[in-house]
Image (cartoon, rainbow, N blue to C red; front, side, top):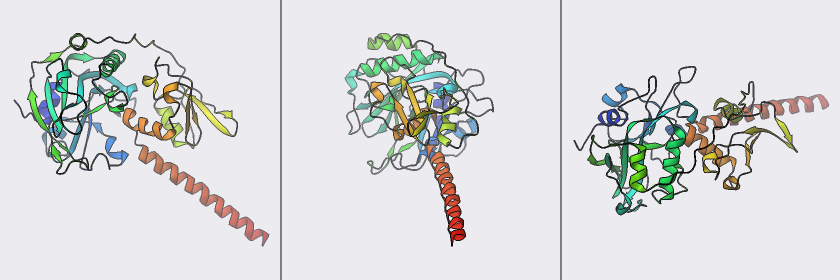
Amino acid sequence: MINPTNKEFADAVFHTLPTGAHIYGTAFKEAPDQAGNGVWFGGAIKDRSLVRRSNFTNGECNTFYVVSSFYPDAEGRVYRRKAQFAAAHVITLDDIGDGMSAKIPWDKVALPGSFVIETSPDNCQVGYILDKPETDADLFNRVVDALIEQGLASPTDPGMKGVTRYVRFPVGTNNKTKYDPPHQHVCKSWNLERRYSLQNIIDAYGLTLAPPTPERMFDRVAVHHTDDPYLKCLSDLGLVLSAKPRSGGQFEMVDILCPFHEDHTDRIEVGTVYVIGGGFKCMHGHCIDRTFRDVKERLHLKYGVDTAAIDAETAAAHEQVMTKGTLALVEYLNRKG
């Protein structure tokens, strides 16, 4: 079978799902390099979305799934968040080939893929379906990090890292603005018998893994009744360490776990503050030039946060404050007059 449907593909990649876990993905018609953050929010993929006519099946949309499955939260909502990680199911290498978007030559591919999908002209994704779901997120991340060290991805490509990574389905279209006409995905090879353990991948590529990340216990706190939507978002993600802001001169800040800790040399998560009103400072070298704009991008890509909606909420709150202030000023001036 060379042309699997997205339903057949999902059934093969996610052949064993942890009890209660869900596949996650997104599909949209907008060009990815021009689309707003909202299209990346995605959701749990139901079987019916993969069998009836939908954005996932019509072949005209950008179609993505996440390499991992996720558990619902306490309220039954499924989000693409590390905190809800259930298991990783596939490792993919992107940008293999000779096309204008390719970064890795074919001779660096040391292990035959379970599938090969051409996601842009002469540029392929090679996937390794895992023989059993990997529930150790740290081990999975260390294997991916080692692949990056081997030159099998750009170290600055945030899309390669993490258990919340999006990759393309075999049925779909890549309509980034640089492709004219848009490129229809092509499944170049498909072999259901090829399932691999992480050790198979480690051995084939001669990978040396970093030591396991120490298990760190932090007293995460929930922030209630905050007027700062991003602080509330960080709290909902379990990233806030101090419920009460502390003074930083003319600013107030709270201690948080760094959203970029996977990029830190030692993966230490602390030493980071969120500045009330939309600011960020991390003391680690990898984050020295990062701004809150980078944090918003990370929240969107890693945790599936709809930052566009939060920005709109923040703008509305500011407008309301300004309106109240203006009315108060007018009332004051009228009294003075």
